[in-house]
Length: 96
Image 1 (cartoon, helix red, strand yellow):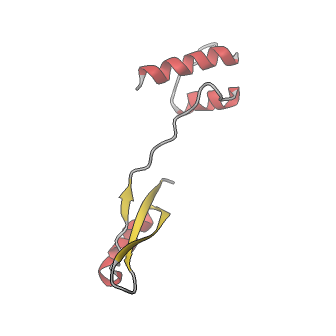
Image 2 (cartoon, rainbow, N blue to C red; image 1 turned 45 degrees about the vertical axis):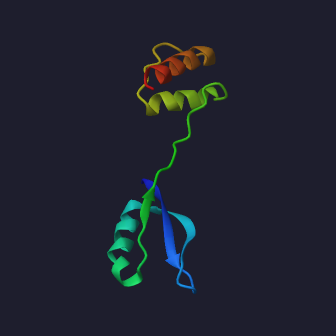
């Protein structure tokens, strides 16, 4: 299930707009909530989220293998941490 961050603005008691808080909701829930935005006056907008980069230097062998599998990286016959690390590093550099 994919999640996105949405910022919510709301009028305070003085009638000024203020950021209430950032909530994490599914895109499906945002669609449902936005259908009701005419009545509530609240609109949920997507916010860019930065994907955390995978740190090859500090990753454990299991994490390296999982990352390779998620990204369809062919490890060939590599089983040692240094060999897997080299392949994953090379793949990351070539796909930037």
